[in-house]
Image (cartoon, rainbow, N blue to C red; front, side):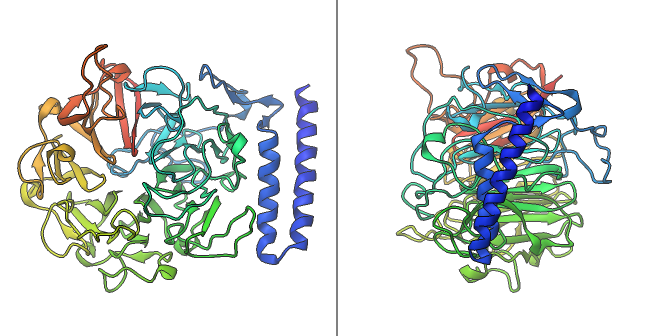
Amino acid sequence: MPYVRAACDRALLLLTLCLGVLGGARASAGHARHAVDAAVATALQLHPWHLNGGSIDSIDSSSGSSSSSSGAQRHLADSGSSGGSGHQRSGRNCGSQATHAVPVAGATLFSWGLNEARLGRSGGDHSFPEAALGDLKVISIAGSRHSAIATATGEAWTMGHNDSKAGVGRPGPWAITTAMPGEIWTMGHNDSKGGGGHGSPPLEHSGQLGRPRVEKGNADRAAAVVPELAGKFVVQVITGRYHTLAITDAGEVYSWGLNDWGQLGRLAGSSTPPNQAPCTAGPSCHCGIPERVTALEGIKIVGGSAGRYNNIVFDDKGTAYVWGLDGCGGSPGGTVPDKMDAWQPRKVDGALEGKKIVATDSGYVLWIVATAEGGVYTCNTQDDGYAGTLKSPREPNAGGELGREGSPCVPGQVLGDLQGKVVTAVAAGREHAIVVTADGEAYSWGGRGPLLAGRSGDHHVPGLLRGALEGDKVLFVAGGEYFSLAASEKHVYGWGGNNYHTAGIGKGEPGAKRTFNLMTPIRAGGQLGDGTWRVLGLAAGFQHSLALAAKA
C-alpha cells in the first residue's frame, strides 16, 4: 500500500506542477515562477506526507515520538569533521558561532515561555524548560515570535507565528511533521499586521515561516515549503522580526519573509494573489519562499544574526556585511541608505577594519560583535525598533545599549570593565547587551535600569552579573525582548520581565504571588534544573526561550 500511495502522490504532484507551468506560461514572465511555486505548495499542503523508500516519515503531534526508515536518514560525518562536500557541518547559534559550535550529532531542543506553537511542543509545563520535538536532534536554534531550528540532518524547520499582529496569539497544540532533507515544515499565522501598532504595514501573508500561502482554516497545521533548500545542509538558522535566514555549510545565505526594508537582501515578489511585481523594498514587499542572497556570491558566510529590519553576517575571513535598515556599514559608515537600496549588502569597516569577527548578535536597535582577539564592538543601526514609525524619535544609545561613549552609529569598542578581558560570546536584546568572558564571567549593560541589566550600578557601561550564577562558569548568553538568559555547562539562568515565564523558574506555589520582574539572575528549574544535562546553546525570542542540551 505505501508504494501505491507513493505512486498516486507523485502523479498528483506531477499533474499539479504541469498545471502550474501551463498557468505560468499564460502569465507574465515575472509571475511564471510564482505560479509553479504556488502549485507545488498547494500539492504539498493537500498531501502533507513524504515517502522515502516507501516508508512514511512522521512525528506524532501528541506524543512527540518519531519514526522513519533507516534508509531515509542521511549519513553524517563525525562531530566536527567535514561532510562529503568538504564543508564543516557543526551547528552554530547567534552570539557564539565560532566559539561554541554544536556537534553535528545534535542535541535535544528545550523550550519554555509563552504557550504557543513557537515552543514546538504541546502539553507539559511551559513555565519550565522541557524537551520539545521528540527525539529530533538539533544543531541550531533561533527565536522571535516564531522559532527556527536546523536539524542534525541539515534540515531547516520553522514554527510559530507567520504574522506581526499586536499582542500574543493562540496557544497550541500544533502538529509537527517531518520533512525530506532540505525541506521546511511550518505552522501558524501567515499575515503581517503591525507590531504593537507600529512598524511594518499589515499584510495577510508576510512569509517568515517559509511557505507562500496559508489558508485561514489551515493556519494551525504543519505544511511544507517548496524545496528550495533540498540538497542543502543548513548549519545556522536566524530569525528577524518578520523574516528568516538560513546559512548552509557551503557558506550560502537563504532568506524569506517580509522585505519592506530590504531585509531579505534580494529581489522579492509575492507568490500569492494579488501577484506582486518584483521589489527590493516597500510596504507590501515580501517573499514566503526561501531564495539565495546572490549578492553575497563568492563570499563564504559562516555566521550572522538579524534585528527587526536588518541583518549582519560575517565570512570565513571575519569580515562583516550588513543590509536592511542599518547605517553601520558602507562607506562612509553612519548613514542609512535609501530604502530602495537598503537590500544591498554593505561591508563594515571603520573600527572593525582588519579585525576578524567570530560572533555576532542583534537586538531591536543595535548589533554586537566579538573578535578573534576577544574584543567587543557595538553599533546602533539607527532603527528605533519600529522602522521609524514612532511619534517621538528615539535617540541612539538612549538606553545605554552600546556600553560605550563615542559615535553611536558606527562601530566602536566596548571597554570599561571588559578591558583586558577576552570575550567569547555576545548577546543583544531590546536595548541591552550581555557578554561572556573566557574565565566564565558574564557582564551586562543597557536597558535603562536594573531589570534588563540584571544588576545595580551604572547601566551605560559593562558591569559584572552576580545573583544565582555567581561562581558558576557561564558559557552562553541570550537577549530577549524584556528578559535575558545565561547558561553554564549544567545550569540555565534567567532575569528580567517574567510575565510569560521566560526565566524557566516555574509558576510558583498555588495561590502564591506570581513573580513578574526578576532583578537578578535566578536558576531555572524543570528538566534542565537537575544538572544531568549539558547545555550546548541558548536562544531568546520575544516571549519564549530555547536551549540545546545533551545528556551529561
